[in-house]
Image 1: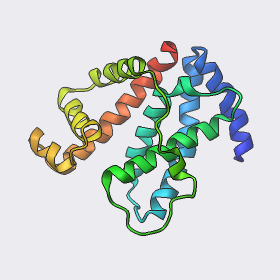
Image 2: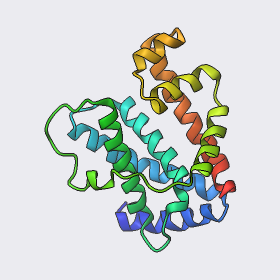
Image 3: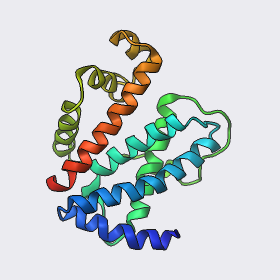
Length: 191
C-alpha cells in the first residue's frame, strides 16, 4: 500500500477516533502499528540491532506515545507524518537510553530534529498512564516503572523483583502490550 493510500485510510479513522469512535481508534492503531513496525525494524537494523523483541518494545512505546499525544495532532497535516515523527523520536530516545549502537551508520538525517518531546498536558498524560499502569499486576507494574520510567537496567529490575532477566523482559513486553490495549480501548472515549 502506498503512503498516499495509507493516509487516505488512516486520516479519517484517526479523526473519527478523536471524535470518540473506539472502533475507528482500534482500526487506526492496528494499521499504523504495521507500518511503524516495518519502519522500526529497518531503522534498528541500520543501527546494527536485529532482535524482534526490541522492535516490539519500541513499537509499544510508540503506540503509547501516540495515544498520550493524540491531542497534539494538527488535522491539517498528514497523520502518517505525525505518527512517524513520534516514532522517530521514540526510536532515538530508545537508542540513547539503551546506549547501544552497533555502528556509526546514521539512522536518518531528520531523526534527531524530533528530539524535543511533544507538548502533552501533564495532568492528562499522567492520568492515562496511571490508569494503564493500575490495570497491570503489581510485579509487572514495578518492572515497567523501574526500567521504562526510572531508567534502571533490566538486570537490576529483575534482581529486585526476584526474577530472571529473561522473565523480566517478557513481563515488561507483555505489560507494555497490555497497557497499549488498555489505552486503545479507553483512549478514544476520553478524548
